[in-house]
Amino acid sequence: MAENENPVVVDYWRQLDLFAPDKFRDEVHIIGVGATGSYVAYLLAKMGVRNIHAYDFDEVEEHNLPNQVYRLKDVGKPKVEALREIILEATGIEITAHNEAVTGASKLKGVVFLMVDSMDVRKDIWEGALKFKLSVRFMIETRMAIDNGRVYAILPSNPADIRLWESTLYSDEEAEESPCTNRAISPTVSYIASIAVWKLIKWFNGEDYQKELIVSARPMIIIGEAVAVS
Image (cartoon, rainbow, N blue to C red; front, side, top):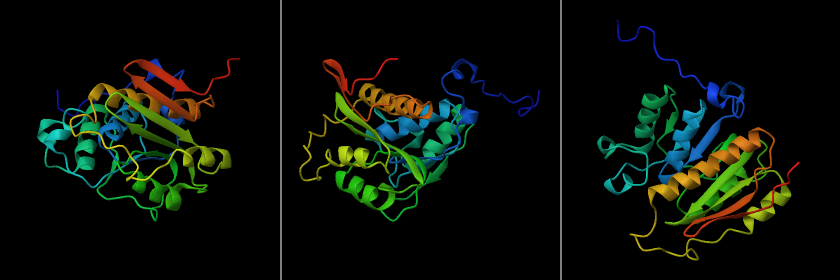
C-alpha cells in the first residue's frame, strides 16, 4: 500500500456530546507557548480545534524539556516551529506559528490564552490589545508556581470582569521570585492547562466557567466561585 493511500482520519465521536470541533469557529490565539501554553495548544488540537495561532520568540532549551511538550530533538528550534511539528504529527492539524512577541499594538480576535511569563508584559498586552476590544470574545489567563496556580476566564468587554481581573494584577517587581529549582513541574503544568481548556469548553457550551479558580496540589484544593446547579 502506498504511504499516502487511505490516510487516517481522526474520529472525535467520543467527545461530540461535549465538544464538537466542527461547530467551533473562533480563532484561538495562544500568547506564550512555554509550559502551560504548549500544553494548552496540544490539548486543543487533540480536541480538533483547528484555527490555532501560537506566539513565542524563544527557542527550546534543555531546561524546557521536563515541563513542556517539546522533544529532545527540538532543542535549539524556535518553540512555535517545534510545536507546529509536534501537533501536526500527533493530530494532523497545522497550527499557525508566529515566531514573534505580542505587544499592546498587536491585533487579536476570537479566544486569547494569555500565558506570558512577565506580569508587566501581560498588562501591556491587556491594555493595548485586549481591554474593551470587541473582536476578542474570551480571554483565559494562567499563573503558576511549582504546586499551585490561578486560572482566570473573563470577557474583555465586560466591565465587571475587567474590574475583577485588574484587581489581581501586580508588577514584576512585586511578584514573588521563586528559586530557579522551584518553579514548574509537569503535573502542575498539565493540571493548570487542563483547567484552562475546560474553561474554553464551558464558555463555548454556555455553561458557568467561573471567572477565577485558585488551585493547589499540596494539599489538593480548588477554590472558586460557587456554581449554580439547576
